[in-house]
Amino acid sequence: MEILLTNDDGIFAPGIRALTHELCKIGNVTILAPDREQSATGHAITVHHPLRVQEMEFGDDSCVKAYSVDGTPSDCVKLGAEVVLKKKPALVVSGINRGPNLGTDVLYSGTVSAALEGVILGIPSIAVSLATVEEADYAFAAKFTRIASINIVTRGLPPDTLLNINIPSLEEKDIAGVQITRLGIRRYKDVFDRRTDPRGKVYYWLAGEVIDLDEDPDTDTVAIRNNLISVTPIHFDLTKHALIQELESWTWPLEN
Amino acid sequence: MEILLTNDDGIFAPGIRALTHELCKIGNVTILAPDREQSATGHAITVHHPLRVQEMEFGDDSCVKAYSVDGTPSDCVKLGAEVVLKKKPALVVSGINRGPNLGTDVLYSGTVSAALEGVILGIPSIAVSLATVEEADYAFAAKFTRIASINIVTRGLPPDTLLNINIPSLEEKDIAGVQITRLGIRRYKDVFDRRTDPRGKVYYWLAGEVIDLDEDPDTDTVAIRNNLISVTPIHFDLTKHALIQELESWTWPLEN
Image (tube, rainbow over all chains, first blue to last red; front, side, top):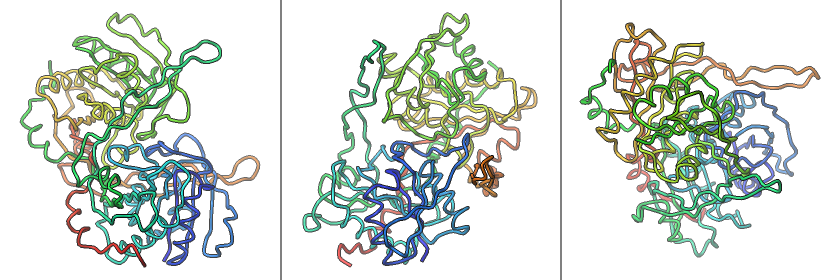
């Protein structure tokens, strides 16, 4: 089985290394990952600059070919499928991200966007995040990703859908189980720090404390808080279908 | 009425200028727009760098205050609401983009992402694009945006929903009408140009010809082809709710 692996923390991050080790047990792994951290890039693609693809040494796993890319996670998936592999892999895996990708925040996530790019290209895809920004052990999260990968390839997913997986940063014995969830609603407060630079000019730095507005137990945000692995099906159709009929009843004068 | 205006073509683009002229007829306009073109940035936000906000002259419209930002369209909306206005405006308008934002492509769109940021902040929002990449006259599109803005503020939208409006680049008399649509499915073929730089090294440049895989007349892509203005309701919940029950029937062994 051919697996395309990427992330948004960059090719030198520990999460992608742990994942490579596990995914090698079930297939050939081709890594295309950004040459530096690309967090919060959302679904950016590079259109105004050329992209370089550089083959890299990646430890002694003979099942791996690795390439660094001076672009975004979505660029990596596009280049991996279209240029390096020249065919669709069986699976796109994005991660393991350092830090959670939950609720409304998935819109900003390079990790999730890379997996979305996979499903746009017609490839079953998963995004995986470890729910801590501290240094952590990725071994269990990597093992669970291997199990989820087998599940997806065996059972199949609808062509427009990826799985977004968030894993608590706990020892395996303390994980409470797996829950299928929906995306919760998150907001931030005190969003910008206002600071003054050494020359007296004002600048702003995005900060902010997360607030979960949605406390339903079926949300990913609450599942993680309850030490559960959260598995959320995500699709790329942003249409709000339920509103189409109402909008048709509005008048839309071309003259005014 | 307080209107926050942004775009992804940058503060010097003609589309935002035409829009300012029309929106001044219905409210006070505060512009925060990127200091350069930011197309295909998706929903990127700037977390690793500070942001500067620079007040600008913006013609002789006394109803306008304008600021350039060295960030993305989403940064502009966050900064506009939280730092410059210090309150929620009545409406966020993003555009007028040079070029269509249709179907699957909205995921890559800085224009649409800025409006999504608006609804995330709880503000009624619209994204507006003129469906041509050629030089064009934005006057009619700007007028229609004013009409749509009045419609939205009068009628109200659900709190998680924006309207994505695409306008054919035609004279007003040749516009066939307004259609409420869903997002069509677009793909690209021959995606990367492979080239060699002056030093003999290979690079890749994103290219590709668009293919509309979805030919239903209720899609935005087909509406534009039929010279109709397309109005698509878009929300930020990417959850594929219909799949949750099936995934619950899968087994998710923690050991394997």
